[in-house]
Image (cartoon, rainbow, N blue to C red; front, side, top):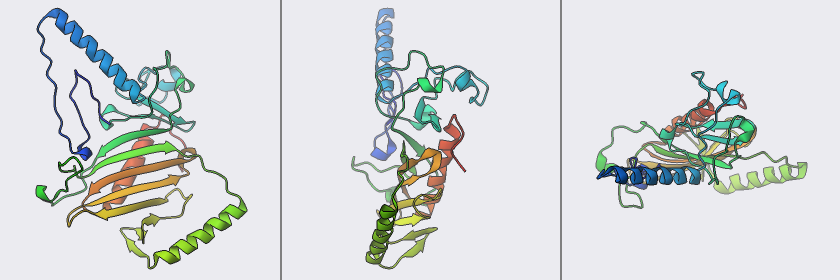
Length: 270
């Protein structure tokens, strides 16, 4: 979900097929300029609250996590506290968004001052597809062509639930029945595939689960969604249009790498 204000470029997700436009503001007089800027500040503030941005954090808790020794991640990196192992300072260029907040904390000098959010959305623009012609790119629901290798990611806290022995036994039995119904399994791009594809087992650090759909001879749509024990229990969901299923690994690795890079706490990974 991109930034939308009356005094900044209007950016809209390429995955939705919209174009990028700029809104021009005419400066007729000094008073008109002041009114325009005031409206701009108000719209921007409303937008940041709707998307859960907190950008006023500064102090010892944040200084020790800054790469350049600054007192805070800075106004260009909204901060999202997901759990006690994961506090993400996401650069604006990745278009981060989360649940709406009423206001920024009046003071944000400690991690505990941040509200806990259930999820964070962000976007990645990759360059994994190559050799295709522009007219081979599929159309989206908007009627315009989808941007190849544009990845929409949702990341959230998902604390693992401890299962009883009976629940584990029933789960294994159900899994065996489902695998029998799926029929033959085959290997594709490092994944085991049948009705859907997976790598590893649920609960493993490297577990991945996804589906894919061929849209034409040149492009497929990949939908990933799975839980992980990383960072105290999390869930990763992403979707992307790309030219080959083998790109799933690059996309998935890039999403996890960014999470690790943005995490102010830098723990929770093996």
